[in-house]
Length: 114
Image 1: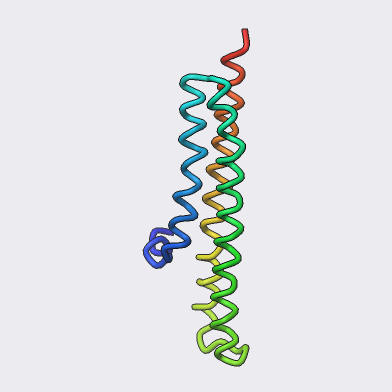
Image 2: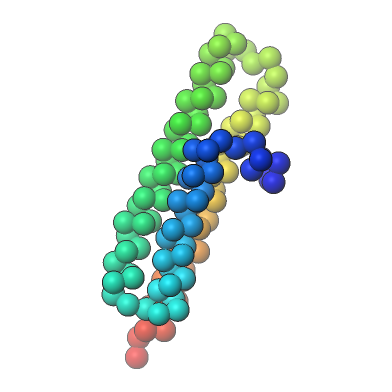
């Protein structure tokens, strides 16, 4: 997986960095629950999800563009498959971070209840 990170483009890395924003907000909420911090989670979560979808669509477009340049028959099928795998990684990281963030929100909310 680390070798894939080294080959990723700026857009894919930016997508994964965007996923850290709701996770950081969830940690802040867990440590010190407040209504203000909770309200911030929805827009940050949506931004991360939309970044993942946008990044995936952009990566898929690049892969299909490269495939069309070869007449639809890739010279190196393994390289094309690696491109597809690299394209999925930011989506996986983003939704994993969102899952962890919302679990922290749930735990913080339970701590907040009397």
